[in-house]
Image 1 (tube, rainbow, N blue to C red):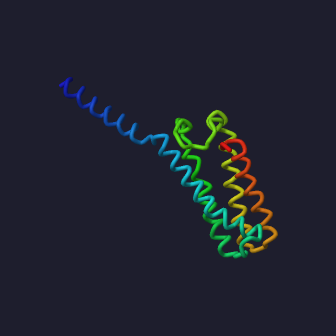
Image 2: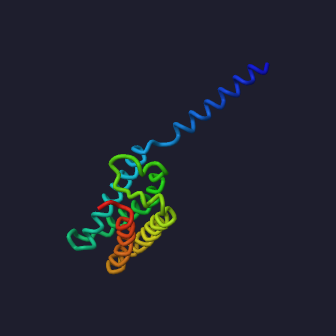
Image 3: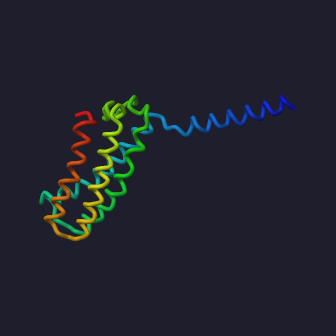
Length: 151
């Protein structure tokens, strides 16, 4: 009886360990995830920048759509930076992220907050307010890139 119980416990423990090991992403998976999220952010941020700079016609509906997407996307990057993913290949993230995690997390929170404000302002349609808030939102990106991204 003890032997059977021991084998059952061992099988349960092995199953649990395999589940945990397969649940943790490999560094390259995390890097790919976060780069994909940032690519989508850029995909939406770029046209808004064009509208703000006057290099593209201002389209309030398109601006608001892209601001809505930015709000959703701004909540996604953090999970792409698990410990260990600083060692993967092809990353532009500096190791300083993981040694200064609290600050990095605060910078991503600032992006989320400013993106939400940008969405709210964009719904009002006031171009001057939109441009001002876009600058603040872009500033959160720059603050993070300047400190935590390779040139």
